[in-house]
Length: 364
Image (cartoon, rainbow, N blue to C red; front, side, top):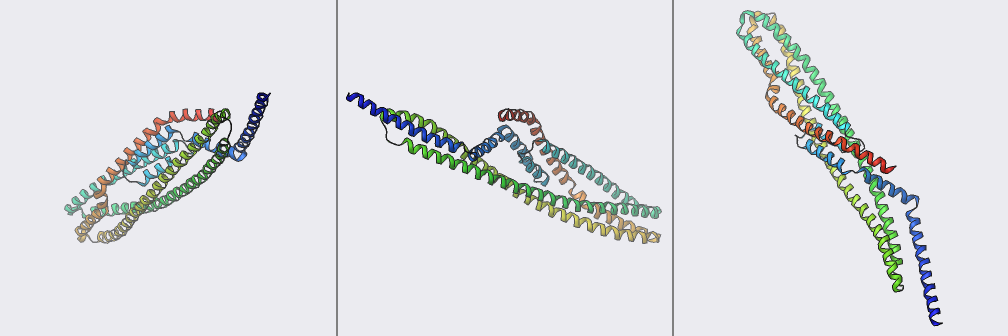
């Protein structure tokens, strides 16, 4: 009879303990199943699905290829566009193609201008020796200067448009950086909230499992605790890792943006110098044209007009000829970096397509 009463008491105690455990688990599941918790976990899972290692590796390799080239606003802008994960690689490849075409066109224009300058310098030397055809030479020189004046006016207008384009590009990059930072802050806040919620649930369950019970109860509850608490700790660890990775990505993006601003400042300074140089050349060309028109009326001054023309040629072509090789080399290095980046992105297209299919299948 005593044994029966003991067993009944033990059964009642075990039954009460299980009822209490079910109550705590119900409260925990209610917290995890709330609309706020589902929203937090849904956003975290979607964010994890979007961060695909293959895509990130391809972006990193492409950006590395771009950064292997010379410091250039053009390369920095494409690298900035690659960091925007909302779009695929098509936009970056299109930018690379357009930039490659622009660089090739610039080199072709420089080649033409260089050949033109060299040819004109030789022609002017012959003109100075050919005093018998002084009037004809003056007319040719005047025609060339008028063409140079037209080219310089076009160049000045082009420089002004390039400056405006650079300002727009910097403004767009600034807006993108602000949007990325806001997205980072929002995601970090949500992830932190999710971590705090998991910690709250973990503490609540841990407090329950620490209550005193019989040996059989302790063993059963310890197994349950290890399962539930282990899952919560694993989720918390994953979210903290995601927060750490997002923080590093934010730091990299900010550092690249600051480098873009520095390169843009350097580019703007170079554009200003070039514009001032061309405006000066345009003024010199106008003066030279006025002189040639005056000398055309006086054949006795033909020789002086030819000398002046030679000086004008030197002024007009000096910058182009002195910097030709350096600019050609720089464009070549930019084109090489662009080709490397395009090769990386083109090779990653199939992988990204497969990744997107897996992601859509997972998300239903």
